Image 1 (cartoon, rainbow, N blue to C red):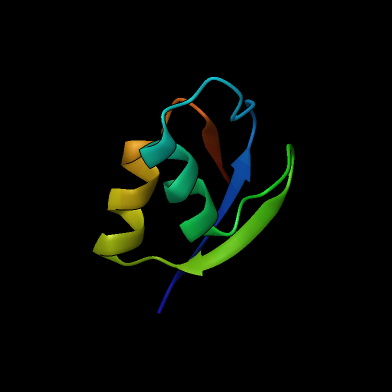
Image 2: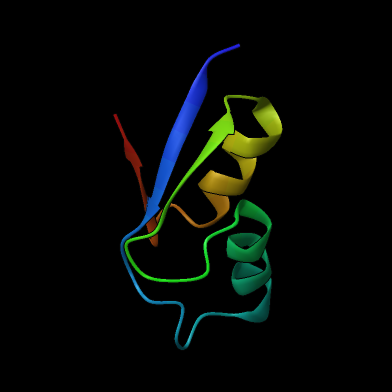
Length: 58
């Protein structure tokens, strides 16, 4: 299955608790950290919830 790389580009400071937990679920704990996940609908949904804080790296 295809993989997707996600990078946290904006800070989690002043974000709602739900968005912080979503970033934790994605494995993003620091700025500019890149994690790799399988490209599944559930991962895409998590990314959509915090799309303003992350970018997809090619």
